[in-house]
Length: 484
Image (cartoon, rainbow, N blue to C red; front, top):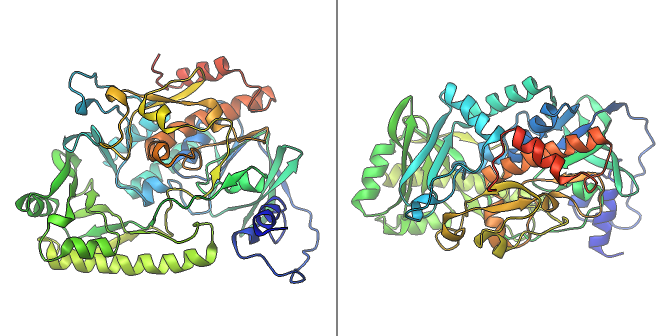
């Protein structure tokens, strides 16, 4: 048995002590501990959503609002995921109309994702959909959020929807009945339990549940990992003036900041244009010269990137990356203090509890969205989401400022009867993935997969037996926008 086969076998067997051992180096023959059999307490649900991040929050809300008894399993102590830890803003609720004169402005992602923004607006936790005044060939709007308010608001919305929220809880394995998931093993300080359900959604970003269920996957390792920091004792206006002085501004947006509209909430600069070797030093630590905020004197996100030589599913290499990213954060603050006016007393006010990824495992689904599907603006006869943003713009843009569709079959995990996937774990083509992995697209995927999982549970059918018309009707009723 080769290493890959060993790893997959250990994942499938992940209902004992070896549940996570496939993520480390294989143990040499003979070096095993046979865990004694143990009876685990069982909880029963209609839908289990693994991962309470960008997609998982919305998936769990959607399932519960359809009347499904829903459990959400999240390893950290709060929901939010990449939205609160890895990005700079939410991209994008709109089509790229500003880059194409004459194209109609359209909000293409609505439903639960917009309801989250509405709640954030009430508590001062977002800039709103701030239009870009510079760099609008990249995105027409920038939706900035307060990371901490996002955690609170989504947590409250989950509870209000009736979701059984299990934070500080790890998905440790899958209980299979042929090609069907019967349950998942979860582990917390309360012990190990089995959560049985009729339908499951993998929103773990790493594809953990799909891998435990024996689904086919690869590990492209085609992105850098990141740990973003929040930086305090700074000035957005002075940063703007500094970048403008050196003709380095590439993006800018104005929106609500500290309760006042029309303020700079996003700015990006071309670091190579900055004096004193700043650009070269920033490049060495993978620092992106873009930030957003909804508060005065605070940069909500400064991203530090690091390209690992292996997949971020490798625990031992991730430990090294975690240390390196912390070192880069410290160097970033030194650069801000030295070079950027208004940042002389800057300090780190927030870090992510662990590094964030843009892709872990790539899970094989019934349909693989292609680069051409995205940039040609293709729609499908089973669309569940309309989207219009590409993170590689202006190099790649959806044709004529239009949109493309995410088909339902692109969320169905191949070879497993009752499992859907949402978020950055779908789409093999890196170019297409640069669109589908973005936060607002992941949120929309979550609403689609959560709704579908609830309908499948209610009808006691597999994901492929659910009639598209039934799903479409439910999505439209819950506020999802369709192109036609």
